[in-house]
Length: 191
Image (cartoon, rainbow, N blue to C red):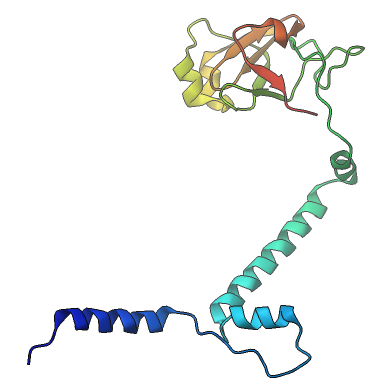
């Protein structure tokens, strides 16, 4: 009598299923076992070395992150996170002679936290430089925000500031309201 090939395949599938399926554990026969212990026992197989190793790694990562955060962030920064962040209003660009930071109606400054809403990249700025006239879209798309790669199209110009994202660029000398510029889509992304 010949072996049926379908029964061999079914036997192989049954064997693989029994090998790779998780065993279901029965709850302990204790009457005072709470539901969280019961759920934990039912979900995890006994002697799961892999699960234990992964838990150890996660615990170590959490410890490293906590140590790094507390060691490298000053207390003032943690207070800043608790306060609501502010946006520039109005938002300005300015030359290198203009102060950078949060702009308010009483203190006009060049925003240093610009984000392009078109390409979703942070806008970089370089003091005392202006963009060469032969700059094009592909140059910025391939090189922004890396200064070392962008410097080939930057020319020294005292008092000017060169701004760029991956899709737009501007050289500015005077304090200029961003909303008045039609060729850039930059906004303050909070200080």
